[in-house]
Image (cartoon, rainbow, N blue to C red; front, side, top):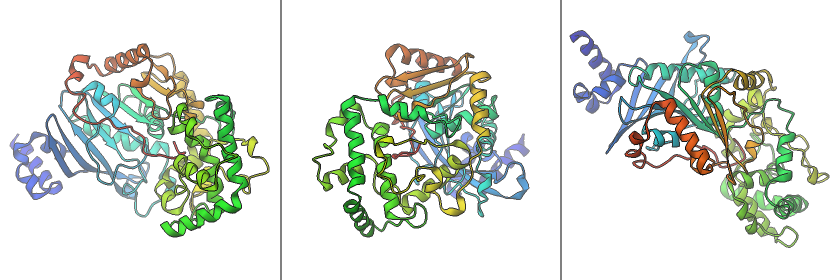
Length: 459
């Protein structure tokens, strides 16, 4: 027993600051964290009802060749109780530069602990040098598998995984490769691009969402903007010069950036706006150049398709190009107005050296597994969210899919119809073995994370 305590103290001295190490002997949680090989405590925040840690965990760059190099993967821990359930939160992107304590909706409903993981290749969780062929859904799922295995030494109760959009997809992939790691998955607004070119579902969505009047005006805004390209592109160029934006590294030119942003406008509107916001859109035919430029900026963002903004999202676009797929729309209402056919692809947002040919096999495998073999999977979608046009179809093995009426890409359990919200909550608490009375006293002590690491037309 004494030798074990001595080993823990030695580990603490290696991974904690001197001040933290000095009190480690009187802090069982710190001692438990220090006992996890490869885990480093970066910082800690204490508040009433919880403790919050920023951590790093050493991972193989390539899990098939673990001796070939490692990297430090960032994660955070929201600790409430060793006896509480634990939520594994995968947002599919990077953590904030300075992570702060927040909780996901499942964490709040369960009064749970929460382990939040930064996706590999989002900086700083990137191997150096980086072999981008190691950025696959299996490699990230194996990152998460090692993290769950390590943290089960602290939290031996039930585990639930969650994420929204790309984070929801990430949770599905982890479940596919390591089905015994967690006891259930809540995947929010997670697209499922089974056959990459077969995207008519997206076109059907845009043919039916909202009112005919709203759809017509949004389409006309896109048309009118492209007709005024000769006047609006110079505005973008002047804006870029003022802000320090460039285009040559990824999208190529200001004209290509302009066209991509215009193509994104209607998608971005429905992704993050509500039907009532249609009334605030300008009338395309009578709008001034300034009004069109400002409205498109608010809806889609002229700054997004620039080198400065896209670099952060290279790991997403790399995955979309190589494995995940991306929406391909027909844009029939824009015939004759586009200068760059074939621009609307994931590879267009990558530098040339990262562009990849798409491999359709992984998504076909994932879709088949979810439909036929998965269990304890809960999917939540928004009725007016374009990303929900291609959805996962869960099996009948203790799984469900719910759609939040009128909701966009921020759909969650709280926005479901009351009877659906009650059923989804009951299912989640049953999986986690967490009665409602346990969560009630803990649910309001932290802000709810919207779980979306993006604000543009990426998932």
